[in-house]
Length: 252
Image 1: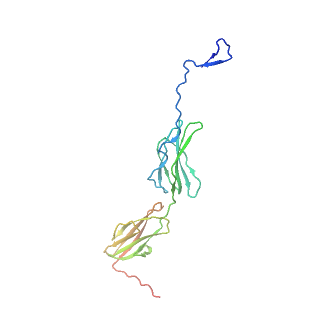
Image 2: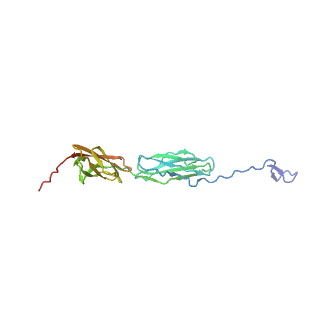
Image 3: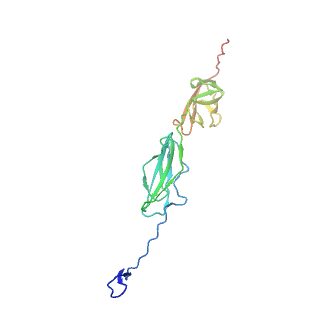
């Protein structure tokens, strides 16, 4: 642009600006699309995760679109301890604009979530979060002490006498623990006996052999999800006899 007198010869009370050659404005950049989470690509957890103490869980970061370049992308995990009202933020980790796998090792009971964030170069900067659903981690439980009932009678010190060739109905009993939904497995650890049928319940039928003298050991293993001492095992010692008597109770 250059000044030009409105009236030739006028020393110039008023001038106008005239566009000169080569001063045409060039093409202007298209305005950036607003920063947004790409459709169906927000932060998420992997469906096969098990949310228990000692487990490592997998999440996926969010994918974004739009925003004024350059855009930075990062993620962090957020935890809340059992009985607390405060979320604790882990350190931010820089990532790329993709559905990247990220991992977290669970070390305590409470709650857990994954936060992705994109921040563009606008002035002021625009930032957008994408957060997973909250997952709850229950406290660990304990499998209690294991003992046995033999034909409905408690086996003292996990041992009993039985006739060769007989069949015993065994119950595995846990006490003093906090575990729930236990599962059971049985096996003959040694000696002359056979598990009558495969079972995953707390009861078992054992057929004793005909050899005498001898003994057998039957083991019950108890498992429970989220128990710190799972699996736990107990062993019943069975002494085999050709005959044995049970003392009659004293009369009063």
